[in-house]
Image 1: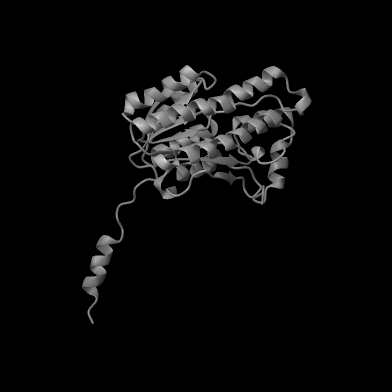
Image 2: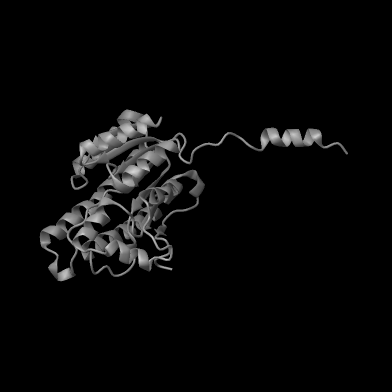
Amino acid sequence: MDTTQDHTQISETAAPASLGLLDGKVAFITGAGRGIGAAAARLFAREGARVMLAARTETQLKAVTEEVRAAGGTAEYVVCDLADAASVRAAVDRVVEVYGRLDVAFNNGATIVRPGPVDEVTEEEFDEVYAVNLKGAWFALSAEVAAIRATAGTGAIVNNSSVGSLRGNPALPSYGAMKRAVNSLTESAAVTYGPEGIRVNAIAPGGTLTDMIRTWDDATPGVIDQISAQTPLRRAAAPEEIAESAAWLLSDRSSYVTGVVLSVDGGLRA
């Protein structure tokens, strides 16, 4: 039996051109001037998204935006203070103004204060972490849902949490508390907006080589090595590895995943 024709037909139809995970989508990323957010901006653009970068520091935003464009991606930026509701709403409005829609968002922006036990955290420090890490996530999530609903109709949002939200966090208690609240916010939003086709998930990174963890390591020398030693993979993550997880959760490849807090921690909690 001659199967040449059958094989020819299969080879012509079985391997369509590969599309990026986020091909055709408009993505909004907070905390995009450095670390995981900057890695996400570069990755999302490579995966086909048009990206809007948001953060407080314009020089960092401009540098990452230019880097994305130099690599052939489409990127714009907007200065945004997550602790200011009007600033957050204006940033999300800017996405729609520039690109005409919003499909996906990565709420990555966060801050930390000096490490120390619960009784040594000052009220000012607690309020700062609350304003940015929890209230800012709430501002962003609310604005993003409204923008997705009004433009794309359906979409996905990922909040960046922390493995420190999933257990006691004696070194960074206020940070862990706000991130645990973000997990609850994520789950509530997933239940609320799922019927509309808006998925909401979170990732909980372990030790990741960002400026934030280096600041912690400067204050408490050896922290990075200690976390790496406790991690089955015996190393800290690169920011790009965390961004990959966010990209998958924002993509249609995870179309039946919502309400999840995904540990991306090298097995730290296994």
